Image 1: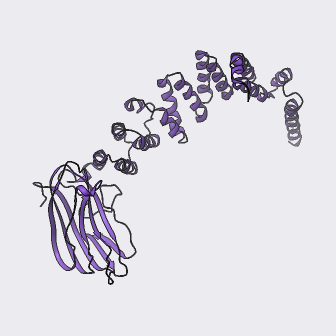
Image 2 (image 1 turned 45 degrees about the vertical axis):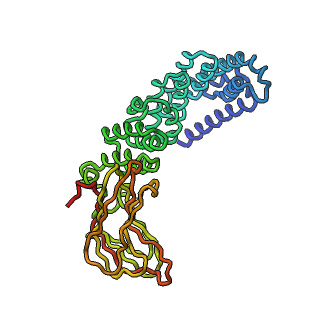
Image 3 (image 1 turned 180 degrees about the horizontal axis):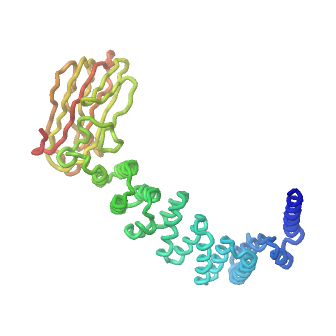
Amino acid sequence: MRTLTLTLGAILVAYCSAGALSETLWPNNEQVNHALCRFLLCNDTPLVERAEYQITGGKDEDQVTRRKEKEEDIQQAIATFRTALQQDPQDPFLWIDLGDAFLEAGRKEDARYCFGEVLVLAPRTAVLLLRVAHFYFQIGENQEAFPITARILSLIPDYDSDIFKKYIGQETATLLGTAIPASRRPAQSWAAWIARNGSEDDLRKTWTWMMQNHLMDETTALDLARTLWQRQFFRTAQELWLDWLGPSRGDYSAHELIFNRQFKDAPNGSPFDWTIPAQRSVEISRGQGLEVRFAGIENVEFNIKQFAVVSPGRYHFSAETESEDLITDQCPFFHIFDAVNPARLDITTLQIKGTTPRSETDMDFTVTPDTQVLVIQLERRESERFDNKIQGALHVYQVSLVPLGRRLK
């Protein structure tokens, strides 16, 4: 065993030494390099570097002069890459380079053959697949590129944004399931990108396709709803969120415009549920409704809010509340206003002060055609008085907003 190990070591040293000598003593001697290739000791680096130089034409050359020599340089590059491939025909990077050279020379079919070899030799190497896809995009054969970019998306997330930009101008329906693979990660990445960069129609089609193929999850649905909301596509955001909720939405939207109106569930983070901020001097808990306790140590400004998508018409708002020892001149009240432009609609209830039994606060109001979204907000404003630290408790059992004529009992 010791003798075999020494023998193998000597062989490896000899091979490495021969490769090193060829690169050091005969770096550009093709005859020597060809001879070494018979023993798998090829050094194709000089050939590749020469070909790349021939394609680019070196640096700082006069452009007019270079234009005249361009065709000859490309032909020399093609010949050089071919020589390198004779030494190592299994190198996909060489096939890529030769394909680029052929394309530069206007030999599209030869280039197509080279890029086809890359697909065979490196079917899961994303960086090379990206160059193959780029070739097809360059020659206007997008349908040939789509399965390749879909393969890349299935392999790694690194090129998602670059690939999606290539899809700009394409009909979304033709991309889904072909250029966008029907698997969860790339589909969700595409949905997030199109929500930021595409149209409402693009996202509607993407959403429908993802739901049909079971590619949607709650996190993605929330992200899409929030993104659409930020872009002020309010109705589309609500429509898609309702689709995600399915039967669990109950009477929400069909009759009642406030979600989770009895505070039974923890807020889900969508624009269509309560936003309840944490504050050190306010203790908020859920049980039979929502309980808000003020510690009496701060002149706190706070609000709990939810958005409601509305149409023109008359509405009825109501809130069932109970209070205990709410003290200061500024106590909680409900505030309803237009989310985009409060000047169009801005109304408030009376403040809820002191100790009051369980009772209902309500009011009717009119929404004009310009208003699409309301903020329904329970708030307390800072007091300007010296004795401004609020204490006491407020219990909100339920909140309701319905079009007049469809009020829930």
